[in-house]
Length: 44
Length: 172
Image 1 (spheres, rainbow over the protein chains, first blue to last red):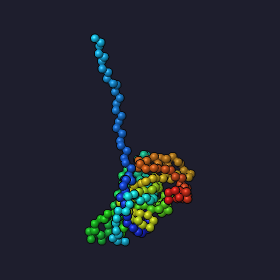
Image 2 (tube, chains in turn blue, green):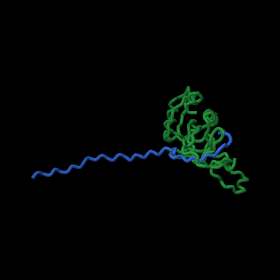
Image 3 (tube, each protein chain N blue to C red):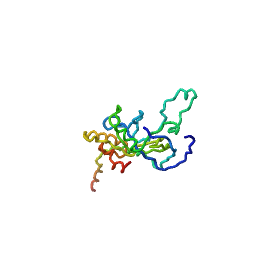
Image 4 (tube, chains in turn cyan, brown):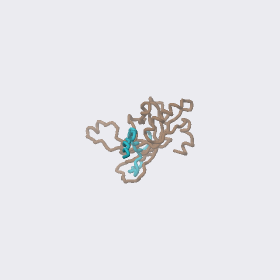
């Protein structure tokens, strides 16, 4: 690529990274489990 | 140009234009340089290295490889003005799947040149996929979808718009 001759040198330190963050990998949805029912206490 | 003073000048990256080749298949498309065989990894800064072939004299003098870019060399990651880069969209060189144009962020050591920059680090900011005026739009859609893994905006651009003054005013 033809961009001509050098003119100046800059030192650039971005405060915020120009690279987008990786999207966090989604954990698989937890298996749905039926709630365990306590056996009803027989009335005395 | 030798021994230029280097000072921390900017806290924001520079931005300029580039044209890339697109290689790969399906949703695993990768940007590649148009001159070198360099691949641009998604979601990772591209770091420059001097790819200039070592000359025999350098080898004899055991000259060490230098950090890129060096003002006295031609190395670094290139980007330039819209006027400067858009002709590479229509070059008729043997090519990959397609070519796309975009803005690129440049940081680290940045050598400012007459019509562009050479930098030590770079990452795309936004990409435009040219849509042939009389072609299939679906292939451009596929390309755009395949480039989404870079995590930057990817838009379609009718090929004739790249030379339109409106595009130049908006983004040039």
